[in-house]
Image (cartoon, rainbow, N blue to C red; front, top):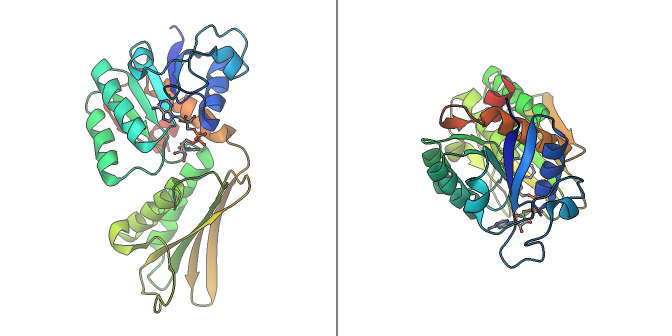
Length: 268
Ligand code: NAD
């Protein structure tokens, strides 16, 4: 079987460049193209120069359809509205899709699910093995404990991050809610300020920290009477997300249409 042709949407971004490097180093995959923002300094630049890779002859483009139609799969870490538009084009072209962008609204998530009727689409707020294991652990612990244990989720990320709480923190909240058999929409408290009143039993609270170059840290606290359980994941390099995205891309190419998660990709 030939190499999987991988297109990288937003190749000039932090994640885009790392994904390009990992695709290039993967013997099962090759870079089929990369998009950048129209009119940006990176438009029309050799991907080899942009990402410091040897032997890649393709140049960046700003037309998403050009990359999507010539790829087996595209990996997208851009902006919510951009990712949704790219997924729509991918569903027209029959190209598999990996969506790593976070901060999507429920409507935007529904649009991805719609695109997934025609193509295999992996959507995951966090592509690391450790965090996906943590989702499972949190669900189990939440299911085992009663409302006497208050669930709070604390996350910290670098100062460039534009959405809060992080997609991963929300994913952990969803896992906790599923474990308890409730909905995060009903029980989630995404931030607190001022005279909030006492904490209601059953709430799932969030606290967001931003600063420096922190790659991503999440702790789920189960605070009960006289004891507390804390489950923590710390990412020390974005490599884990890029590696997960490339693995998801190779896994998705040629699979039957559907909306998949990292748990599907990792066989968890
Ligand atoms: P970034 O700002 O460095 O990169 C985003 C890139 O997208 C930028 O280069 C921007 O120019 C480009 N872009 C925007 N609109 C575009 C368009 N129309 N066409 C082409 N390119 C376009 O951000 P980042 O740190 O790489 O993160 C990107 C996203 O990935 C964020 O939502 C972040 O939260 C998410 N993320 C997800 C995971 C995961 O595991 N799922 C891990 C890390 C980051």
